Image 1 (cartoon, helix red, strand yellow):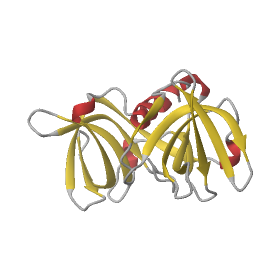
Image 2 (tube, rainbow, N blue to C red):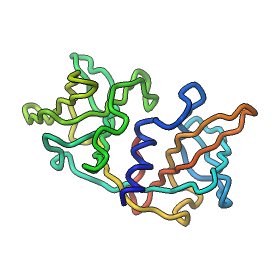
Image 3 (cartoon, one colour):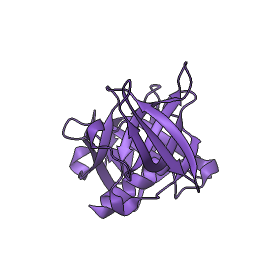
Image 4 (spheres, helix red, strand yellow):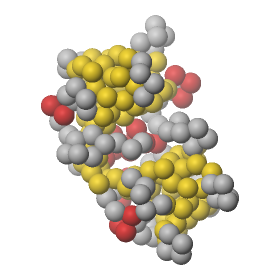
Length: 197
């Protein structure tokens, strides 16, 4: 389970890739032959991703907003709210062994103006909905409201058999010098749960 979690954590954190060449591929599986994954992206284009030797596949499982407590390490994609502050688009609860993975706040591309914040929960409030205060990078803090309908997930196992046509995937890929895409990890929706990242 730790290797599954680590792989997914690296995907959410966006670490382990040359940032200038990194891109996130979100979409549905069109084809898979064991070493090449073809994905129809959200904009309707097709991306062929070469899977590196020893590549891994992970899944996600539903969790509850009520599972979040002080001391947990989360990855939250959020956008600015009209009335100030930030509102969550999705939440990933990391296992305790991976606390600190990808810690920080960075631009994210789930929606326009979105950011990914990986940090430790310092405070949870339930006034006018649930909100958390995350701490990261030597004491910086960010308060994020989490609407009740926000997808909250944790880690799960998956197999290559889950990469069937129509399955939803999230892949942190690296664009090579020749323009092709490669990756060593795929997150796939299985058991009715899709990757919200």
